[in-house]
Image (cartoon, rainbow, N blue to C red; front, side, top):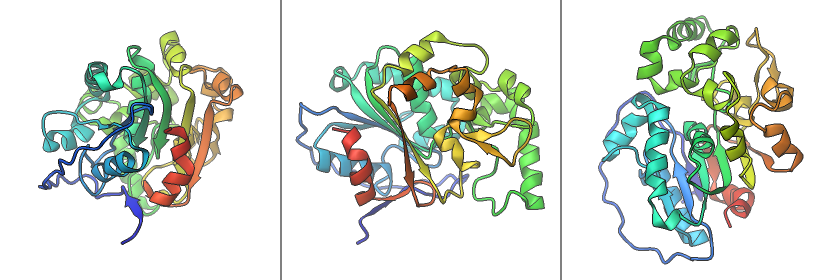
Length: 305
């Protein structure tokens, strides 16, 4: 059997899986920090082939309490939340839930998967009652996206037409309130519209005004670890996983984090964190969320102990 974890699933289809949950209790260590996981789009807290498998893997190998965030009261509701429950509402729900979990009172490490990455970062910035030591983001979209998942080529006429259609509708009140992905759609051709109309990403990136609480809370992290998948065919542009993005006014040339205004003006405190060696950039050669257990052990376990 392949010693790997494949987190890439079919998107934009509602598929309901029935499975029997394993109820074996794991003896956890009180000396190690617990771990909180937040799944991405098209996934849930507990599918055994994805986050459920990751939970068991971490419990068995690191011997800690692992909590995989579930939105709603069922797997079906959790699945739908990745598309239909506004991130602001999700972050508020998770803040309240984690704040009442006795096993997390001493602090914990957190791992975000795909869009769960920016949701967890929002949690760090907004939920002052939690103590998050290290934040790891796998394939996150920290500067948003400007492209379609699995589109074979952004230069394709069909892809471009769909992208332009989504771009036209993404900043309407209907889409911002109804579709999760619209809340982190970032149009580099119209930065002013993005800043004024984005109801989630522009806020947590301090694009609209400087929220000093966001800066203060983010800087409490010991480490902010960002993992970029170099062969990613889902996230466009893939450099958003390292807080890079298209240069404003066009959608071809990419600028790294240190070239962005967020960094230069230190709107989130990332420059200060970088100076303090709190930011870690890691690469994985797989497609979106495709990594082996061995890669995970070698690259991430040191931030989870």
